[in-house]
Image: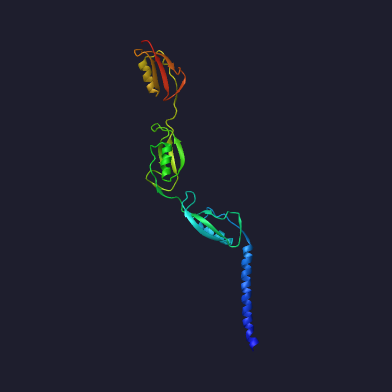
Length: 231
């Protein structure tokens, strides 16, 4: 009778040993399996978890940080390089994006470009693009406009519109020789030209000019008169 009763006990012990052996063998074999690490950067957390689980891997969120290019809740970086191989149930540690950091944008209107950049840099804001535009009212190199606008809450990179000054207007220098000084000055002023005069104070006639008549000259350029004699 005793030997009959001992059979179930021995069978149970045998099955337990088999189960333990099978588990250990599975763990040993699984650790020996090579798995290729997927690239989950730029993917949502939910999609990343599905991809990682299909590979028999684990995913752990290690940190979060602000980023202007990757949306909130998407994977910004991973510690195991994509394409590398690991053994067993390895864990991929990831950094999640918190999206762009929203801040109150200061004004740079009327500032010189380099001054505006330095001002934004002090507040850890980034000037992403500078667009040059011609302006008849704003000096060259000065900020005309910005986006996002001043006093606006935003996480975007800042775009600055900077004046290139007025468009270049080219004239052919008029024939001033023999002209009365007063008339020559009036014509030069209408053309937006600066004038330098040489000669005696009492003289009234233009006897020489530079640039010479018919020569190209830009608006805002300088023309030189030599005055001598009387009308």
